[in-house]
Image (cartoon, rainbow, N blue to C red; front, side, top):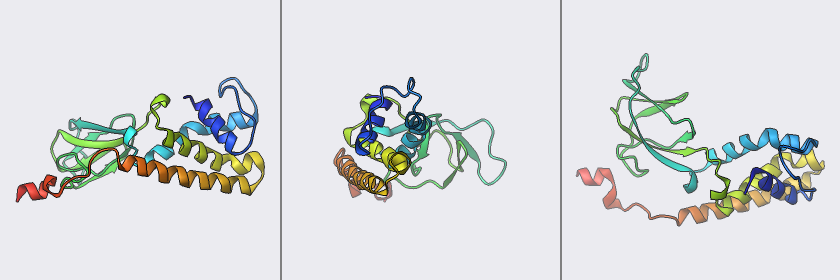
Length: 191
């Protein structure tokens, strides 16, 4: 799977001719897709907690503390698109840690290492689940549909396919893994 393949799926939705490469084609639609592909991919990745794009890391505190308001700062990894809620154990059902994300840093009074989960930018297209590829293709078609075809009806079709793909992806993601049990909760364990 390549960005060109995903863009061709978007063009299929719009009933447009396929492209051979995002790099070697100078048609207006190809230039549009080349300009917008990375942004569209990152936007869709950051909107949801896609299982394939989740990453765990234990961050060491920065050597320079925030100027005010918090005692510690932790720089997020370069591939971080969105930090998930920060908890004491690093799990989604753990006890929340007061914090705020400011720029590329997490500010908090908690000491390191800080266990963080985040949605990461991933460019390994062969590891993308089919449901995500369908959602991304529909999202791109939705964004460029009117510009390419001049028809609102194609945009509406793309919107419908996007919603269906997102719903399917969420159902699939929801059954990958186990739900946390109440007994696993930090609060219950402390009692």
